[in-house]
Amino acid sequence: MDSIEVILQKDNITFDDFAVLLSPEAEDYLELLAMASQKITLANFGRTIQLYTPLYLANFCDNYCLYCGFNADNQIERKKLSPTELKQEARVISSSGLKHILLLTGESRQMSPVSYIVECVKVLRGYFSSISIEVYPLSQAEYRLLVEAGVDGLTIYQETYDQDTYCQVHPRGPKSDYAFRLDAPERGAKAGMRNINIGTLLGLADWRKEIFFCGQHAKYLQDKFPEIEIGVSLPRLRPHQGSYQPACLVSDKNICQIIAALRIFLPHVGITVSTRENAEFRKNLIPLGVTRMSAGSSTEVGGRIMQKNNPRGSCQFEISDHSSVSQVKAMIEEKGYQPVLKDWMVF
Image (cartoon, rainbow, N blue to C red):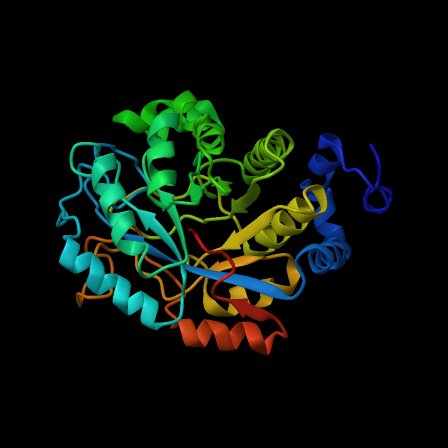
C-alpha cells in the first residue's frame, strides 16, 4: 500500500489510493491532503463558488423513509404549489439575484406527476437561467420530457450504497427499489441532462464505505459521459419530524477528509455543501475544495411566501445555515472567492 506522500505525487489516483485517502490513517495527514485539495481545486475551478437554492413544489410522498420529514406516516400538512404560489415563490427567489434553482418534490407520482413538474418548469423558465430537479427516479423518456421543457440538471442521491442498510431505512414505498434508483443518473445522462449530481446521506452507514462507493459511481459517470458535468453532494443527516437517529456519526473533521479525498481522486468533479451545515463551517470549507453552495434555503413547500413558527413544521428537515443570499455572497467574498449566481442559460 502506497503512503499518502507517494499517492499525492501521482498523476492518476487508483481506487486503492482513494481508499487510502479515506482511511483512518489518513486523518494524521489531513493538513497535507487539504493543501493538495486546494491546489487542485484552484487549478480546475478557480476562486468561484456557484450558488443555487432549492424550491419545493410538493411534499406528498408514498415512501416511508425513516430519516425524512416527508415520510408518509408523518402527520404533516401536505400540499403542492399552485401556479400562482409558484410564481410568488419564484419572484422572491429571483429578486435575490439567484438564477440557478433546484426543484424538489416528495415521491408521489399521483400527486406530483411528471406533467405537473413539466408545467412548473415552463413557468420557472421565465425567472431562472438554469433549472435542475431532485424528484423521484424517472424513466429515460420522462427525463427527456423534462429536458425538452427546460431542465438541464439532475440531482439524485442513492442515500446509501449499502443494500442492507438501504432496505432497512426504506422499508416500504417505491423508493425501496435500490437498482432503479441506482441507474437513474445514467438514464438522466442518456436523456440529455447537462449536469448530474449524486450523493450519499451521511449518517446512514459507515461514511468511509459510502464515500468510496459514491466516488466510484461518480468516476463511472465521468468516464461514460465525459460531456456532462458530474457533481457530488455531501448531505449530513439533520433533525426532522421522526425519531430516526444517525447510525454512524460524521464529524466536521470527517467532512474535511471526505472533500479532500474526493478532490484528489476526482479533480474535475463538482462538490456541493448545502445549508445543512452551519455558516461558520461552510465558510471554512470554501478553500478546501467546495465548488457549489445553496443559499437562502427553505425545505418547506412555499416556505418563502408563508410564515411558520414551528421550525420543523412540514419541512423535509431542519436547515442549519439560515443566512440570506446576500450574507452568503458576502461570506464567500470575505474568503477571497467569487460567488457565481449565473453561469448557464437554457435556450
